[in-house]
Image: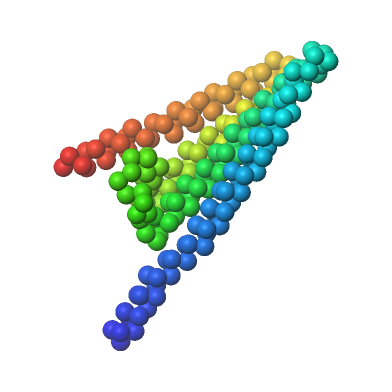
Length: 186
C-alpha cells in the first residue's frame, strides 16, 4: 500500500511539469507580439515621412499627427502585452518547474523575477495590465471627438479613476517591501 501511495505522489508531483506547455506557448506568443509590434513600428516610421510633405495642408497634417500618436500608443500597448507574456512564462516556469539557473545572482533577474508565489505573479501581471489599460484609454481618448462639456467631464472622470488605480496599485508595493525587509532582519 505504501508503494502505491509513493507511486501516486511521484506521479502527482511530476504532473506539475505539464506547465511547460503553457510556458512555451507564452514565450512563442511573446516573441510573436514583439515581432508584429516591431513590424508595425517600422511601418509607422515609413508613414511618418509623409508628415514632412510640404503639400499637406494644416487639416491633413493635424489628422496625420493624431493618427500617428494613436498608432504610437498602439505600439506601446503591443510591447507591453509582449512583456506580460514573457513575465507570465518566466513566472510560471519558476513557480511550477524550476528556478532559472542563469538568473541566479543577476541584479536584473532580482527586479524581473521576484515571483515567489502565485500572488506575486498575479500582482506583477495586474500592474502591467493596468498600464495596458491606461495606454488603451489614452488611445481611445485621442480618437474621440469632444463636442460638449459633458464629453470633457467624462474624460476628466476617466483620468481621475486612472490616477486612483495607479495610486492604489503603487500603494501596495511599499507595504510589501517593508514587510519583506522586516522578515529579513528577524
